[in-house]
Image 1: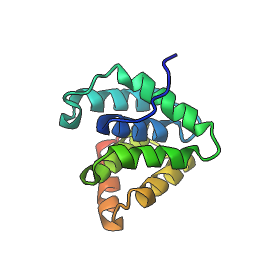
Image 2 (image 1 turned 45 degrees about the vertical axis):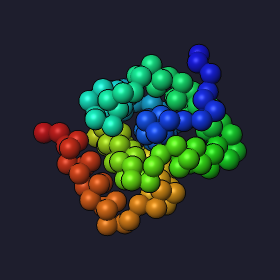
Image 3 (image 1 turned 90 degrees about the vertical axis):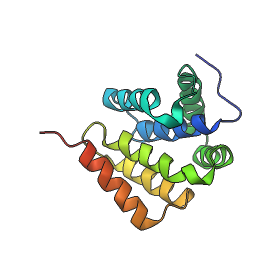
Length: 140
């Protein structure tokens, strides 16, 4: 297994937020992993990103979640690595991962609330982002 990262690039920070949402309900679902990979493969913000780093970022998130203050440490790493103009992007990606399997669970809701707070996402903007994620992931 790859070693955890001591610091994150901006792209790593976005991936870390997505992975954190995926593991927040203590079960990583295939739909969530596929959503993360799809976003990394297709979104312009990840154009220069080495997809092989996802495993190291995931290991970092898993390690932090095992620590008592790991979530605070994760948010510190994310804020240090990610320019503020990408905080809403991080929240949008988190919402897409949470909605990817068609059900947003309690752990995911709590983490999304924490992300809104930690990244200072305006409540009106958050509602619009959440609505967009919900409608993108509806099924017939």
